[in-house]
Amino acid sequence: MLNIALNTFREITRNKFLYLIVFFAFVFILFSISLGKLTIWDDSKIIVDFWLAMIEMFWFLSVLFVWSQLLFKEIEWKTIFLILSKPIKRYEFILWKLLWFSLCILLIIALQSLLFLIVLFIKDIEITKLILFSLFFTFLKLEILLSFVFFFSTFMSNILTILVSVMIYFISHSFSLLLDLVWTTKNILAINATKILQLIFPPLEALNIKDVIWSFTDFKPFYFLFNTFYSFAYLFLIILFTIFIFNKKKFEN
Image 1 (cartoon, rainbow, N blue to C red):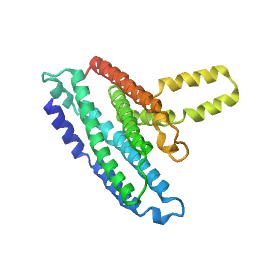
Image 2: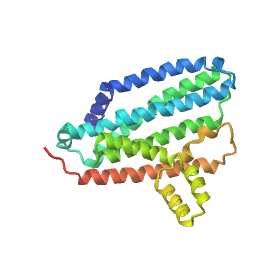
Image 3: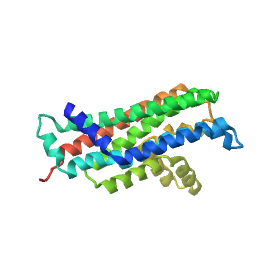
């Protein structure tokens, strides 16, 4: 298990694209500190929206262009044979990889969130429970995206994995719009089909509360509990499918 952890850490630290994303992330952080002075609108709204969007976009790009390569490279470069030749089961390999990637995401999001809260404190902006839940839900969204990247990496090329993951990400954020469009057709079959698709796709739209922080605040505690449970259940299912396919996969020398 330690070998998997060390190997995962080395792979992450060797990826120069991640450093490039980190560099631009901190540039945006410095920019956000003076952002309120550059706008004629409410600076608290601008700063909160900017930070929440930046954190999600930063990790969205990282998961797609950094994390998506790691499992693929293990298979493509044949290092998977060396790992699986040791006394380790395939499901353990997948679970430990996911665990270490998730810990990396969690730690850096925690650091970014801490800096974000410090900026809010310096700017004397109220830290509401919706801001905190938005950070937590952002982590859940990225975990779901990461699980899809792992799932598709077991049987797709790297480019196709990125394209399909991006498609799922954006479609999952668009079901309210899709339902509104379908309702205008008054086609019951199309409406029911869209609702079924909404159940199949991950609940990313429900987790996207950062877009309504300033327009809607009357969230019930059940909303947060239900969507947290739903997200973890969805993650569990995707990981099960990933393990199942990876166990069946035949590697060619």
